[in-house]
Image (cartoon, rainbow, N blue to C red):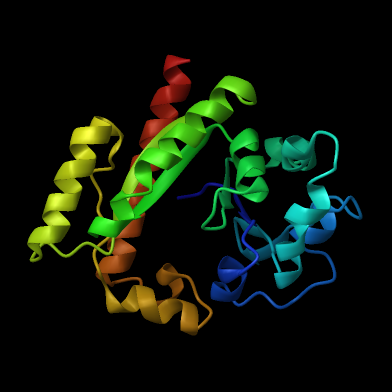
Length: 226
């Protein structure tokens, strides 16, 4: 869509880095968090830069625990490059530890991808509580940007029920676009490609471009209101 985007892989599993087929480089987000380097974005394709991760990042939480201002490390790293991009997305680990806390302290918006299964609902209340605490104590600008229903199959009653439940709880914050369960989305990472390069005509690509349009519309509207 012509936007300049930076992705930050803040997950020690490095699934984002692996999915895009980016080879290991000397400098990852781990070295930056340790204070050994500024952020070093690598160009994945035109308009898309990535700050890569590695398994080394799994030790960062222990190393940061005694650091002064440990919740602000990522924010300080991002400040010099913020104005170079239209959007900066931070891929968080699946836990509410110090790395995720850094991401929340740094961000303006939180997008919550939610698999449309019963067990996935159980973490929503906890996430909302954490976001409220971070907003109160560390980042007054933080707010929920939206909830994204993923792996959705309209034929399954459970999937439809879960979507109805999150709509009751989050209202218009739930994106109209739902990411349908689609084999191409599962295959693309194994080919080290994004879905638009791997299968641009697939339902997965259609859904994600629709989601991108919704995100742009919402953020543009918010900017105009502000």
